[in-house]
Amino acid sequence: MQAIKRNRIIAISFGIYFVLSLLVLGVFKFFEVNIVITLIAHLAGLIVFEWLFLELSKKGRTNKEVLIIKTLSFFLSGFMTALICFVLLSLKADMLVAYFSCFVIIPILPASLLMMYELYMPIDRLITMSIEHSLENNIEQKNEKSLSIKNENGKIILKTSVSSIICFESNDNYVITYYLGKDQSLKKSMDRLSLKNIEEILKVEAIAFERVHKSYIVNPDFVDSVSGRSQAYKLKVSTLNKEIPVSRSYDISVFKG
Image 1 (cartoon, rainbow, N blue to C red):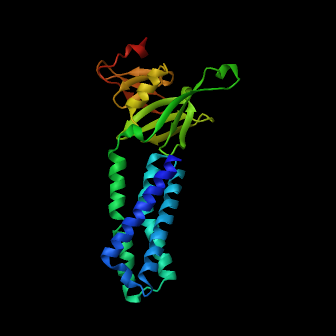
Image 2: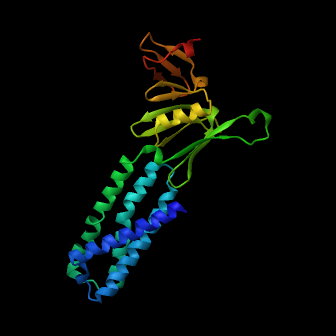
Image 3: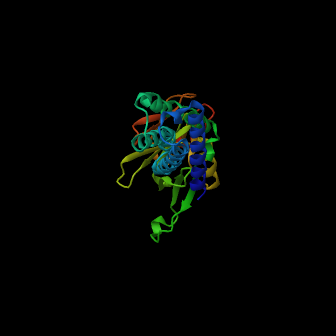
């Protein structure tokens, strides 16, 4: 409900901003019909289409997909409104290029503000992450735990058993989760969250993953061997077909013992 209310507010604010911009630019003079009718038609179109595209953004599986759809929504809603008004209202032919140009330029500001807001807002506000205890009746799975990550709209973007997780890798403002699917094939999910947030939740749940590097949290069960020398150790994880670096401050004896 909160996401729906937020999308409505954004849509209405965007519609008002866009119409005011069109008024300042004198765009409504391009039409031969009453200015009030033209204004109402544009306002209604912008609000409705923007809200629909924002709702569509919930279909995005990752936070990156959601951000892309939201950013494009400002341009798409403007273009759809312009197209409908062009068809239904009497637009002067010599003003066609100038009219449609406005629907490319005006959305740049809100799209830029959205990008800045999403990129600089606290990372952990964009996701909710939790460890859930399985309710399966199977005795072997009775104490199994699953990792659940939801995006800002409450949609589950990743849910898998903790035992199937190979490692977490930090990548700028994103974290890549490597895990095994039900068919035991390697899968990965890239989501906007912090490695620190993951580490804290794992500690609270007493899950024995190891923060071996500033960019890696590893499930010891998937570590095959340790290579390298003192101050330059690496963990071999054959499931990933790669070696994971180990920080100098990390006690490698956890894996050697």
